[in-house]
Image (cartoon, rainbow, N blue to C red; front, side, top):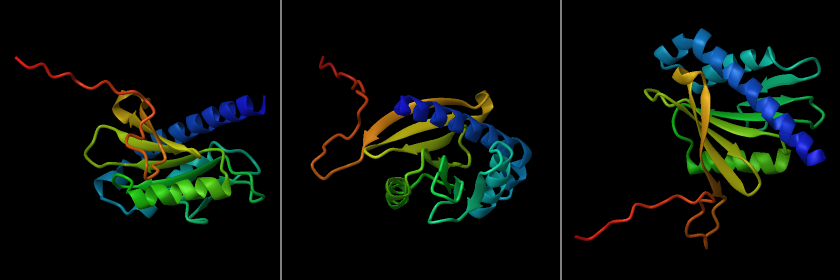
Length: 172
């Protein structure tokens, strides 16, 4: 039952994150036009997230390596967020994953804003894998899971958990 409660809580938290992201894009579009620094996006995103989390939750920026941390300051963390203006590098992914393993937030996300694209990329971190998702602002913030990858070990040839069909080539 506890596992199902955590899943439900994570779904709710992700939904609140998406609402705050929508507000960021809609009301703070000038940040995208001005090529603002990542910290500017973090600050505004924290303000939008603050609207959705009730009394007892703190929304802090730049805590313990995360860009935004929603927590009760007693160790309960429903969301840790890392923000990037470009694709998240391997080193940034590892930093977020280690944060997820040590601080144990319920949900750890990295958001890639990706200037010039019609989507934003979300990375969701778990102990043994990373989910990759697109969110489409122009399509009512629809999200699509692209793939789930195991955390790479040196022995892994293909860390993708989803089976991706490969095109067959026919020789004529």
